[in-house]
Length: 75
Length: 172
Image 1 (tube, chains in turn red, cyan):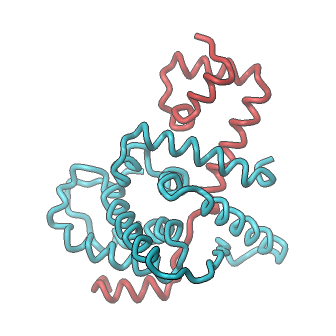
Image 2 (tube, helix red, strand yellow):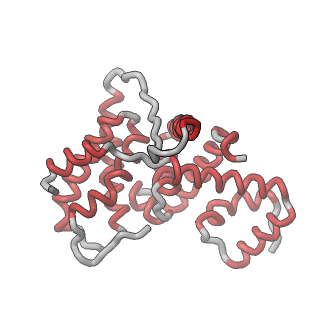
Image 3 (cartoon, each protein chain N blue to C red):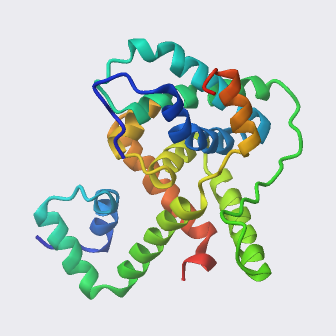
């Protein structure tokens, strides 16, 4: 199985979730090995995921947590 | 991330595990910290009330986020009827250590990330926050938002592409 740039773009959601079949996964890797533009795209999308998980999560102020904990009788 | 269990989970543990996640989801949807805190409170009131009927047959993360998501959507619907306050941009710095320069950069990045996430349409934003921010599986996001897995994948593709354009300078 071979994929072109457009086909690879269609496989990216499953690629990132690790949900590709072995055949699709091999085809994606083969394409990425030879296509600098797609490698660049994949690297940037990977970067978006990393930014979201490393910097996108918010922390509720501890005094608010304590207040809600008390109101819910959680001690 | 699977938090499912056959036994009834302990409410205090659930709160400690999911409060920040529900807060993040609610804030991303509503963009008001106080209202997001109210959503957390309302969500856990419902979670604790319904815990006895939770049968442990699905991922508990999806169940809790689903309740939180519905609360947050209800708040935004109510707010649409009211005039909006000026939006306060969240500047979260994860760790209060490091140099002043690191603080400024972390604050700037958080602020840009905040704007980029806010620019997504609400359904796309919720899928992105739960999948890429909170680390739920595609199936869990589908359950939390009550949509199909293929719809989750479509929204994620749209979100990641838009985020990529907005945050280009931080990605290279």
